[in-house]
Length: 268
Image 1 (spheres, rainbow, N blue to C red):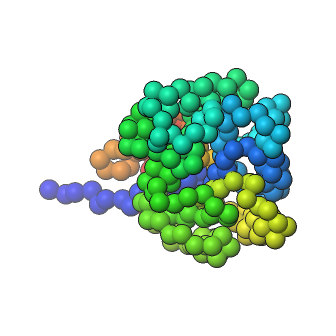
Image 2: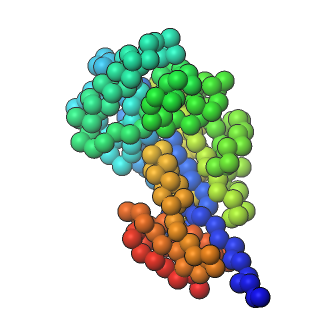
């Protein structure tokens, strides 16, 4: 009996890329204006986790949210920013849902992401809510601090180091048999000096505008990888059906293919 020689098939990020950079910043403080301007200048995108119940002078007013965060993701951060591991479970659910409804009323789209306030969570909270903050969920020992950097493969191998040092290591990654993600998170109010802002701009100059990197929001990565897992291949690996609503990219024996939404593509 003859067997078909197997193909080497890899999931890719959009455009056949093998790296993705995403940013995540909490609390919607006034410093977000400068941070978003930096991201936009260098083509970097990310997620901003906001509290609907804290309209204070040091925070971006709701009237600016739509325009300021255009092209980025707005996600939940609870309504009042409590330390939810100390809260009753039903009140934690109310904090998240109230925040979500407030944000959706302003942004005009479903808000599906969530960052834990103060990095606080319990297994019961994680089971209750559609958590999208994988860093906090899987690594509760990590806290948001000035210029924190988490760089990890999608296999969740974590390395913590300094921003420019790890950024340089990230842009130099070249082995396309891996998918790499760099996830930078924190609070914009932690940029207290011009030196801090200079460092972030240097990082954006270094990491932005690279042909091998997808610049995405947190929820876009979650959705894309979930859709990629739903691709349907023949046993021979010569055809693939994409049942999703967005294109998915794959690499087959070194050649890249875009699999359009709702289509079956021959992998020849």
